[in-house]
Image (cartoon, rainbow, N blue to C red):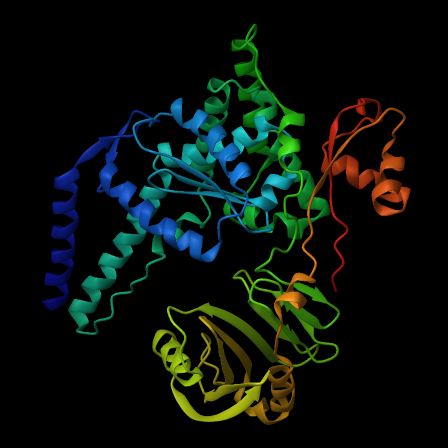
Amino acid sequence: MKFRRSISLFTIILSATAMIYGCAVNPVTQKREIMIYSDAAEVEMGKKAHVEVLRQYGKYDDPKLQRYTNEIGQSIAKVSHRPNIQYHYMVVDKPFINAFALPGGYVYITRGMLAYLNSEAELAGVLGHETGHITARHGVKRLQKAMASQFILAGVAIATESGGLVQGSSILLTAALQTYSRKDEHQADEVGNLYAFKAGYDPTKSMGFLKTLKKMDKTTPSAVEVIFRTHPLTKDRIDRVEAQSRELSRQGRGRDLRTRSDEFISRLDGMVFGPGEKDGVIEENIYRNRFYRFSISAPSGWKIERGDAGGSLMMKHPTKDYYCQTLVSELEAEMPPGQFARSFETKSGLKRLSDSQMTISGSEAFVALYYPRSSKGVTLTVEIAYVVRGNTGFIVAGITRAPYFDQAKPSFRQVMKSFRFLTKAEAERIPLYRLKVYAVRKGDTFRSISKKFYGTPDKAPEIMEFNEITDESSLRPGKKLKIKPAIKEG
C-alpha cells in the first residue's frame, strides 16, 4: 500500500504542476503541449546553468570576437519565434568542435568550431540552429523528462524508505549536452536556416557547415567527435537542409543576401587553436599547463591524454590496468592539503583507509589510500596525493585493481614526485598556438602558401580543405585564408 500511495503522490504532483502551467502553444509548431515551466522559470534555469557552463568550459578571452558573435546571434534572435526573451551568445574556450544551447536563451559555440567555419553566413546558421532548439523548447521538454525520472525516483524512495533523491546542479547542462532526437534536429535545422535567411544571410551558405563537418568526419574524426555525439548527422538531414535552402533562395531572389567570408575570417586572426591555456600541452611524456603553472611526467611508454576539464590528464600503462590521473580544483580559499583531502572525500564519497605525508615540488602533500568499487563491482585501489598552492588544489591519483597495487605503486609514486610547480616565466614559455589569417597576393598558389607557412608545399591540400576551397582558380588576390598553426605534440 505504501508504494501505491507514493506513486499516487507522484501523479498528484505532476497533475498539480500541469494544472499550474497547463498546455502551452509551442511557438514553432503552433501546437498545444504540456509545459510545466513558464518562460520566467525557463530563463531562471538557464541563468543558473550558465554559471556551470562558465565553470566547466570558460569564456574565451577575446572581447571583440565575443561582441561580434553576440551581434550575429542577436540578429537571429530578433527574427526568431520567441523574440520576447533575452538571448546570450558566447564563444567558450574549448578546442573541440561543438555548439549547444540552454533553455532560456543561452547559446554557446566553441572556438574550435569557429575555426572550421568559413563565413558569417555559416556562423549565423550554427547560431540559428541552436536558437531553434530554444524557440522550439527542445531543451525544456528534455529536462521535463529528466525531472519526471527524478520524481519517480523520489516516489520509489518514499515507498521503500531508502531515501536518496539524486540531485545535481548540472542536471540542466547534462540534459543540454545529450543527443537530440532526429525530429528535434530536423526541426532545429529548418527553423535555424529560416532565421538566418530572415536575418539576411544566403541560405545555401548558412547551413554549409553540415557538409563540411560530414566530410571532416572521414578525415579527422577526433576533431568532430563531440558535435557528432550531440548532433548526429545523416544524409537525410543534409538533403532536407539543401532542399529547404533552394526554396528559400527562390523566395529571396532580388534580395541582397549576405555570405561575408572575408569579413568573418578576418575576425579569427590570432584566435587560439588547439589546446588553450587551461588545456596544457603534451610533449613526449611531459605535460605542462600554462594557466595552472605545473608540469607532470608519465613513465616511459605510457599513453597520455588530456581530459575535458582544464588541467585534467589521464596516463595509462601500455599493457596493464594502471592509470594515473590529475585533476585541478579552484578553491574558495587557501587550505592545508589535509583539509583539501577531506573536502574532496566529502564530495566524492571516498572512504579513506590510511594517510601519509610526502614532499612534492618543495611543498607538503597529503597522501591517502582508498578501496572504492568500480561501476562493475570491481574493488580498486586508489592512491591520491593532494597538493595546494594558493587557491588551487591539485590531485594526482594512481588507480588500479586491488591485487595489482604493489606492482603499480612504484609507478604511481614516480608520477607523483614528477609533479612540479612552474614559475610564471616558465609557464609563459609554454606554446600557445594561434590561427593566422593570410591575404592572398598576386602570383600565390596553394603550394607556395604552404611553403611559406609550413616549409613544404605538401600542405596545400590541407589549406584548401580547411578553407572549403576546391578550385585553385578561386585564389584571387586579397582573399582571406585561415592558416592552422603547426602544433607539435606527442
